Amino acid sequence: MNNMDYKSMTVSELKDLLRDRGLKLGGKKAELIERLSQSDGDAPVKEGEMEELDKQDDLVTEEFDMQDSDEFDEDFFEDDWDDEEEHKSRQKPILDDLTKQDLALRKSQRSSMPKFRRQEWYRYYRLARTGWRKPKGYQSKQRLNMKYRTPMVRVGHRKVASVRGLHPSGFEEILVNTPDQLDNLDPEKQAVRIGAGVGNRKRTVIHNRADQLGLRVLNRRRIQRKGDLR
Image 1 (spheres, one colour):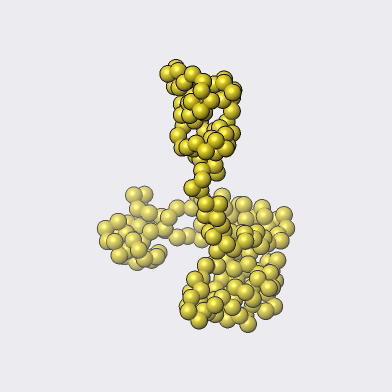
Image 2 (cartoon, helix red, strand yellow):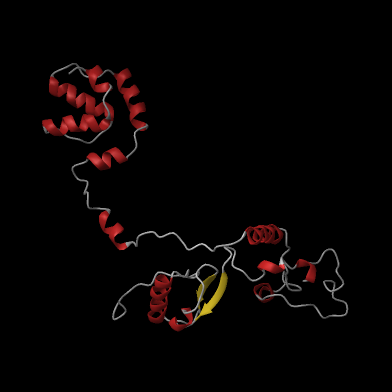
């Protein structure tokens, strides 16, 4: 087989030939062709052809080297897949057209809503971390609605009443602290949010019970099972 036949072959095919002949597999495409040519007794590859083959070899991904290398372990990635759970699509709420329109309207309104910051939030870091407080001072520039101060909370900033309090997905959030509270919930309209004070043991029971009932857990977390927590 001459050099022109080797040029038309892929890196994977070239390495198959090298493997059959017991030759070294590493290197770029030009080096593989030169190694095969020397094995056949043909003339070595010229420098111009070598540069052209190097450019072609740069376009080849590293995936070929991993698949065809003798040192590559096929079971390298299998252990990682065994530890991960099979992907399951999240439960979606069943909404009517009017509710979907109201959710889209609320989303657009929220994007244009200003940030309500506490008075002098820029001066004291502790005020920037806290929530909204209505200014009470008689000469408060924020209370007097000065333009260079942040806006105040007003009733006009409220959202659509029909979807007020709903999760962005459209679910009605139900706070749950025990597995018994999952009973009598509607999986088509209601979703579960587990309390922050619930431990991993009880949280695991709530996860399993919610999966049995087809309920979506909004704040589901991965729990590392160790010790007697299995």
